[in-house]
Amino acid sequence: MGTLLHFKHLYTEAFDDCKPGYLVLFLKGYSIFCAIMLFIAFYAFLYRAFTGFDF
Image (tube, rainbow, N blue to C red; front, side, top):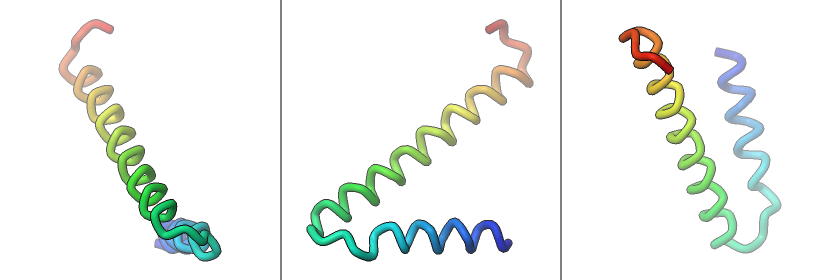
């Protein structure tokens, strides 16, 4: 649990002094998009590994 709180603190601190509001929204949206893409890639890898598909 401490690790998740640490990541949350780093995430919120990264956008504290960022002045243009549209840039903050873009960067937050992009970080969420990247997290979703990483989750999809990890899911696809595990699906292929456990269903026995050839790589």
